[in-house]
Image (cartoon, rainbow, N blue to C red; front, side, top):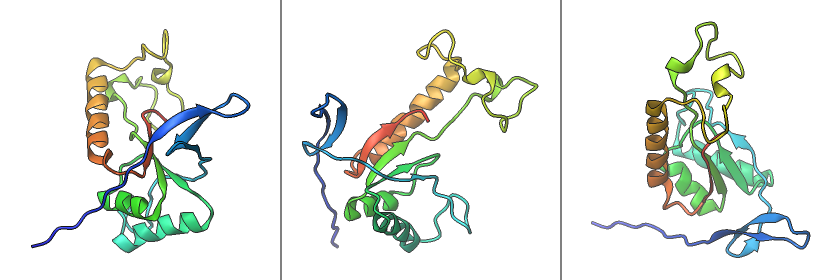
Length: 162
């Protein structure tokens, strides 16, 4: 039996440019990141990619369009997608898939209506209106996502809230 793998090492940080603006650095150098917000929809399977080749093609197409990063929105892709990003040098901003506390929906609103009252952070952003159970669920899922993806050098930014 034989098993092969790969390793990627990088450092991510911040530094101020000549004008004093904070910039993200990759391996010590400021790198402008340009990329699409990718929701990962597929015509035949909604959120399930049809094949490994299709995932690879989407990443290669993004690179051919001049992008150097992809913001993965609303979902976590299969590990193979991140492998292809690692191998092809595509940076990833990984979103935490959105969640909510269904009990917090006012009866006169539906999930399809924009900006329901429960999204208002009151009295401050630190003290949102999530129930303890919803907060615990969010943290559990965030920690699971980070545990799953932390070894992928392509993941440069974690986006906990949209």
